Image 1 (spheres, helix red, strand yellow):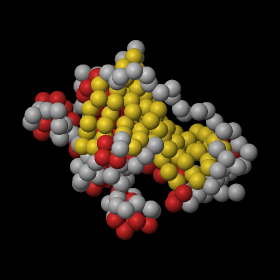
Image 2: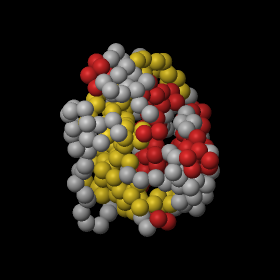
Image 3: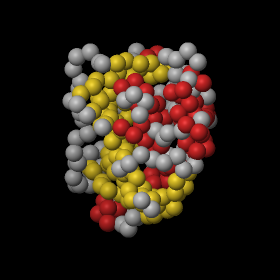
Length: 290
């Protein structure tokens, strides 16, 4: 059997030392479209955008946790004992990040990754790949990637919890549009995701797309930035956790429509692609905050 759930979950965690500095933070933020906020007259030099791009004012968007160390936690999880899968059958189904404290602009940490769970969805399996990072002062973040593996279910395992969130009701508190630049996937991939699906038209066609698609984690980061800038007063330190389910692709050049519903301590979000009749992009999306 390609997936041995018991063996995968019981395997020893894998640890690696990771480091980052202001250049990694700035590159990540630029890959999310920082300095191009269409709601601001001069976004590149707007003081609010300079917090994402200028080293003397820099803060760190919490979703940076997904690319710190080039996102090696997910790569390590897919090569864990008991996991033998065809990467062509692998989809990123969801992502969550829990912040234990704000991420520093410059740091080094021990990143520990393991297969936290394997769920049997019948025609597919879901791997929960957990990465925990800690530095000399203690835990920094816990990141879970939910990896959907087609054709690997039916082994009699636990179906796992439902990730569905009750749909929001009423009009959203805020709606913003965020354009995706034509070159955005090319810039975002420099933070560590070198999958040619996001850059090579020929490879994209082999995968069933007529052109390269945007990284799901880029949409994920763009959405968190919009929420922080719009409803959290631009204060990244207020974010406690951020979770989403990936429901559709985005093509460079399209526009994300981000709708936000605010309640006590949390913001619920939906994201759609404007140019394709608002096709769903992110669902079951929750930002918990101070």
